[in-house]
Image (cartoon, rainbow, N blue to C red; front, side, top):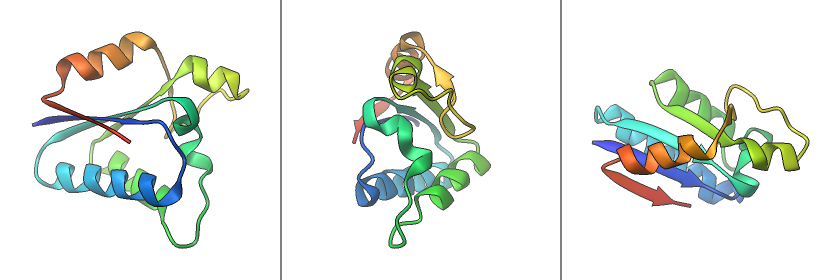
Length: 106
């Protein structure tokens, strides 16, 4: 299965659970693309002792998952992106939606 996840928030518990799902899907042999938009482009800045968001994000990358981050949303936050939040476009979001078997939004 091709799983697309659209993440538009930075609430640690919700982001942590979305990434846990992504990692589980990757372990099942599925492909996963996560598009970050709105507040979600600040995923790499989440720091919460109860929820290992960065660890889960790195595990997604290590397992072959892909992150994409809305370039407009990054620019609004004066950010150029990062490994976890690479600068992407509306076209990339469209392709995630178009090419995924299932799309979830958090």
